[in-house]
Image 1 (cartoon, each protein chain N blue to C red):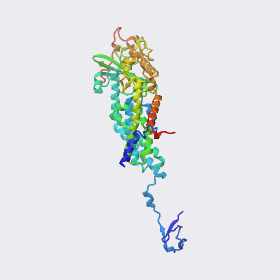
Image 2: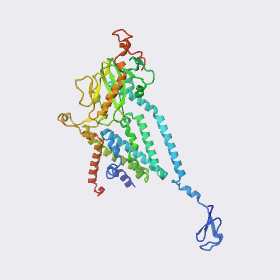
Image 3: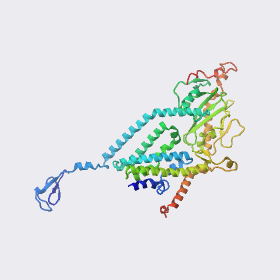
Image 4: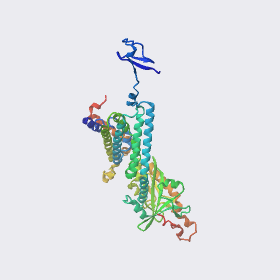
Length: 296
Length: 206
């Protein structure tokens, strides 16, 4: 296809071939009147062909690379602040369980109130947790690291236990604060990832959470605290709590979560280390919190 | 030209409302309207994202290869939403917690793709910006109307504050549980469309 184009300068006829014709077939002009047409290559480049395959592929590739770099850059520059926010939020949730919601300076209050982040040993003893502040207590629970936060509220010792479970649409989590007797509820905090607003989402509201304080968790050696379908709870019972109206599955999820998590904490809740001996009758020495005060 | 820009801003608010006439973004209208607060936040976020995406696509419109234009639009929207969500997480953590999954939902909001494809690909950046703002606000207005009715009758509250007096409940008044359910949002949007068509006779189909 290496054809050249020749144009007759008299009538404008265009001949295609390797050489110019001897005479123009239209106006009979001689060969000298023919001019070679040089293909307008530069002209083609001016109007960028946005439909060519090469252009499309290059465009997509450049686009993806730019966007990828942009996202990496944004994510890297903001990471520190985001992590700090998550830690702050987790601390606020722990404080919320101690009925200290919406603190202005979370970090300062947390340092003041929470005296220790401890791990429960199989016999119920508490030993200081040495690692960095954790924000995912689900994986900690699954790994057998049972965290207990020791708090000092106006001179009274409280224990906060993190909980994780499943609601209707996604995960739910919360913190339960107990008095020093390790069975009376001092306060709770629940949150959720994707429960229905106005129904299951109400577990995050104070209306539901205010039903917990004063209830008892343990009866003998078992977890007795129960969240029942709305209206089914016996008002005089120390263990039963009404769920959220119209959110039976989420309420059941809260009940299952409390039961599952606190069952794992039974050695701590029932002060098992005292019963097993090793300390004198009546003495609570071995159930004291061991060297956790040093850790903040 | 000024008149055209004016039209781009005002048309989608009422006569060519994205939810009522273009029937775009219905799915998110169902998901976030059980309460007023998330509805407003969602409406505002969509407004900002549509406006920004419209401007970017409008600036790029002459270079975008025709065959992959939808993918390019999607990449721009997804990148924008991700960046906005990252910034919220860093500087307005409370808002980002409230928005939670809805931020991601903005990417799939059909209003975005609809406006990019229908408007930003043919018009200049300023007109596209106004079109984005107009459509976002038109969408937000419908969300707020629906959320107002649903929260008031479904929970007896507005913005989380109790407005139905306790004495009514004692007298036997009950919240309408159906209002909280997603199907009711569809019925309410239907009612608004009914009202809207009654006011705009030229939109009625035979």
